[in-house]
Length: 158
Image 1: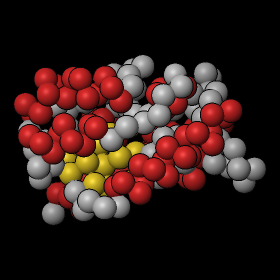
Image 2 (image 1 turned 60 degrees about the vertical axis):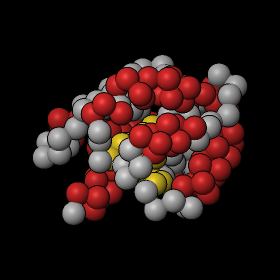
Image 3 (image 1 turned 45 degrees about the vertical axis):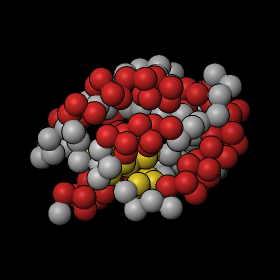
């Protein structure tokens, strides 16, 4: 639902995201829909649906990409806290902590924390960032994410 041409008008991007996906789906389809494009940078968001399904996130996607494209940078967007999945927030934060620790060991990887910026003064998700379902982002939510991701894309383009 992230309208890439709208939010990143000056950056050539190919959207390979699809709703309802889990990390295993990204791993399965990467050789067919990502690797042939030979991207310099991959922006990756996943894990939310994994946690909701009772799974724990894995880092195997990195191995799949870097085996074929060793210089590709991967920008990981942290798993977001949402109104709908608030009861799972501690599991999501634990997954984020593990992912962040893994990422810190590889300079090709970047971790973008969207959890903290999406929280209000009460420590809960800001409702003005979500559509009515309390799970998916609205325009304000995507503007926030864009502001957090864009500096990493610009830095990598230099």
